[in-house]
Length: 433
Image (cartoon, rainbow, N blue to C red; front, side, top):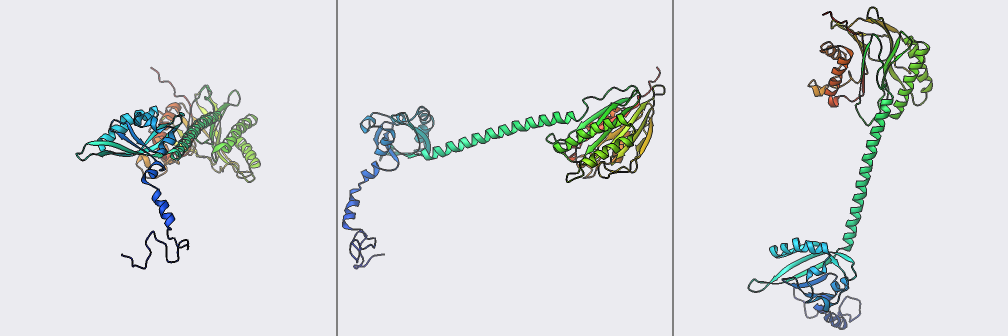
């Protein structure tokens, strides 16, 4: 749009006169602007500027760049190449990447290089360069702009240090996790017998499956002598996980052992454990468990083993006979140990003939989900366990536990609770040749 004759020009005093505060530029200011020549702007630019011949010889450099490097113009122009301004690493990158890429494309933007000052100080810069061509298309010179990247470099270095610190913390956390896992394994093993004792006239086998190596489970079992003829055994599951459950597990094992030495009756042993848990954990942090406790008495003359058991809220023991028949040894009336001050407990008795096996397990086995086995999201259940045991190739304690350990592995993610197995059997009679 053209202005009227009454409107001031862009560099003329306004209608209120010079200095009236209306933003008009005075004659003195206009004169000062004219003194800011293009050369001054080039020399004092916030960026470094250089022009080089095609072989890299410096033909021109502005004052900003020279000030950065602490160099004199007469020592630089016509005497040095652009690569001479770089550190050793920057020079290598320039020769192997920067220069070839510039020759190929004719222009390059934002490449990180590092300058070397006269005092040895290094200065990171971002370099953009363009090749200038003559009228015949021949390359004449290279013009480059160097932007100060010290703040960016410091930021990147801080990011690098933070990343390195995070990596170190992650490695330390992983090492701590491995150490914790190893400690949990050692602690878990301390809550179980290292090996089952050898009992004359009895075969035994056990197995413990950990659902999560990062959590302490509460399953437990043991087999120990009571006197010269009888042996005690128990298997159970403390409610909860972690160190608190482990503490109750340890206390439960030693309580049952001590109770059996005082009175080997199964009901008396579980009653002692119930009293201990009910009195000690009856406050704001109650602790319960399920348990089966029994007494074994092998008969060396007949090869039979008499078994008397009592149960407090635990899955019943499974009896596998030598003829492949099966039955659950029911113990009616048993409640979780530790809930009531005087729970109803009863004893069940059975006799293991040669070739018979008694299997005890925690509920991680029968509560496992069978989705991975193609049966939907059902519990594995007691009847499936009975069927599996009856069809096992060998029902001796060791072979049965081996088969069941494979079954547990087959559940995969469907097994989300620890599982303990304890199998006790009367050795089969040797067949005459």
